[in-house]
Image (cartoon, rainbow over all chains, first blue to last red; front, side, top):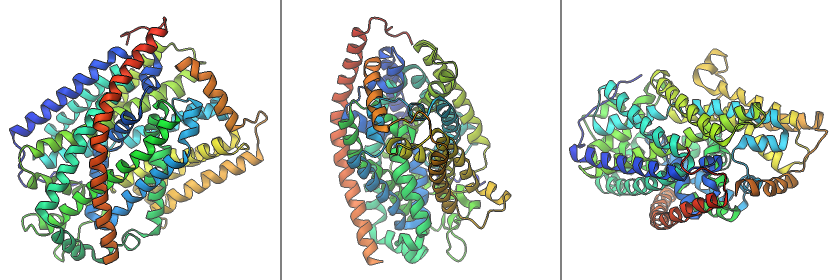
Length: 527
Length: 56
């Protein structure tokens, strides 16, 4: 793994003050709203009282995370303008979800708080517990690299190269997030997400415009042309159909309509009209959360290509970009390093505040999501739903602390031997390959059965073979990552169909009637 | 390559303009929504005698 690189930085004491003031405001706001939390409904879905604009702010605040910014910039740095296809797919498919209501509208009608709760209503309690365990474990594993991404960004931007200092800063940041998330749950998360969205959005747009004006459009185009050739513009040449199809599935469908942290926003919305509006408007954010960081990655490429001091950090003697697994950490550092050289004092502090905002809002949402799943979908069903609201909230807080401790250890120890995005895609796939089959079958096919659900969920574990080290150990290097992920999704869907046809349920449930009945029975208990 | 360059330029400009507009609208609307949300949550608790404010 590469050591942190430092080329000096424009980051000054003024910038630390800006960051400090921002963090204080955020934590104070998060702690203030904890007084409104009284029930598990308040804690997990904010009493289902989110209106459209707040839903959009909290959705984008948590989905535009620092980890997204860092890996998207890496894709722009290593792929050029062609990487813009990823954001375009994300925006278009999010819009399609908003217009059609795919998965999100029927789930909101059912009034569920988590995805595994839907599993129980449709397939029974066993599927809920099994699905909850898979979801929580893979989600926590997926989140394991978030702190690493934050540390890389912080190191690059501030010039802090002492690894101990960086770890201490990231630990303090996690503790701040946990303080308000543990106490205030979803209510604190949405209020802080709102503040974080505003700071982040202003910081991202200002940085993008500044970088464009300083580097220059023609310099960008020339650098991409020289380093990547036509592959830097044409996504089919640069990435291939396999990776495009994989990203259509993951960035488009999964991250908007299947990933639990996004679906929690749909479940927290006031009604289905708000859900549709949320997705239609958020499509702009799902486009931008990739495009702006990727553009900054392209700017970094042009900057370092023309900078004799740093050229050999990223390019070999023949001018070829270092883009192998060995240099994955180095290309991750390119964008923050570039910004540390380019931005003036003040703006650099605003950007770091915005990026820490992104990290905090994502961390808080994910902490809340996985701890809620462990309580609501694993522990509580196991004890026959006998836990009181107070016990459930207490248990959720306990799990948050455990997850926080795991994140610190995993972020420091796991050697990232591939692109960050690829790690996230693979760990997420263990959950979403099965989840797609259960959502599609459970919501839209009367014949979907419990047995099909178990088989589909279990088949998601095949996605682990897409991890570089596991693939090598299993002798499956002849398969590409997209082939394994897309193949696993197809297998999960196939097993759902075969299992349901071979072993149908005796008490078959109509998805439409289940949604309607659930909506009516839960309206009273949660309103 | 020229066609792709045109497309990506339009995508970048479109993303910047739309996101700036979205930020302005959501900043104002979101602030008003927070007030409504806290008022609604407090109202829900008043109608539920069993709920315990600040118990968490």
